[in-house]
Length: 171
Image 1: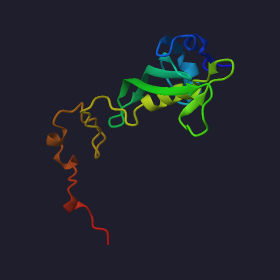
Image 2: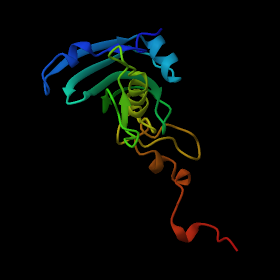
Image 3: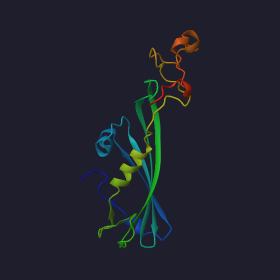
Image 4: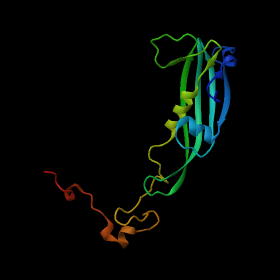
């Protein structure tokens, strides 16, 4: 049994409707990487807010972690802080028609594994940039244009004109 397989909600169910319990879970980089199938270099922090609702619990999870990757444009190593929030409803007796509601077991346990996987995966950006104004690499010589000020003034032949008029026409 892993550290996320079963999570007891007995404490939350004993609260009055509308009251909540907050928990913090820290996952090692190794465990989180195995869980999600993506290499994570740092610990993952998950803050859970478990609120008692009429027939179950609402679980809000806020996930935060830092990843080390290379910039998608210039290949410079960079660190990105990732964060995401997902809310999920768990009911003791969910109706079959409710697709986005998950069940609570008879032992008052819920499995938050998929919710945690979703928050981690959805927090990782598709295109990782070292900064918002990254200029990338020169398409002719491969130089990092961020490091060379006025690269295209020094090497005017490297600048590629990408206007529609200059593209070859497809017949």
